[in-house]
Each structure stands twice: as structure tokens, then as C-alpha cells.
Image (cartoon, rainbow, N blue to C red; front, side, top):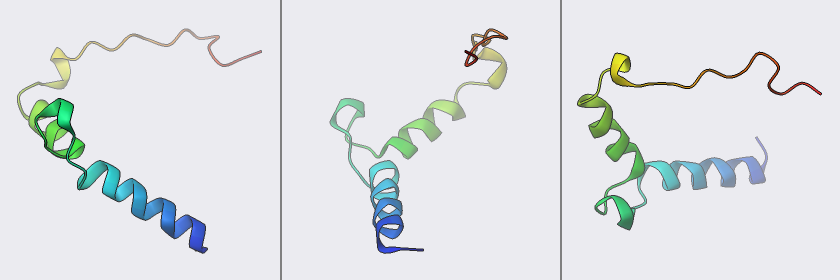
Length: 57
């Protein structure tokens, strides 16, 4: 891996796993998401389906 790829990977790891986010109680985003999904089941998550022609020109 080149230096740029390593730097980007380190930044993404910090951004998601170690950065304290003020809008969500000063916890890392991955910790907040984990806590959220521990109290919500997949069946309670409503996902909007993507139209069949999405992304085509």
C-alpha cells in the first residue's frame, strides 16, 4: 500500500472509531451506532427500496 492509502485508512479508522462526536454525546460514531442497533432489530428498520432504474442513464 502506498503512503496515501495508509494515511487515508488511518484517518478513516480515527474518524469512525476514536473521534468523539459532540452531537451524539461525545462518543465515537461506531460506539453510538453499536448501541443504537443493540436496541433496534432489523425488522424495526424500514428501508426504502431503490427503484429498479436507479443509477442508469
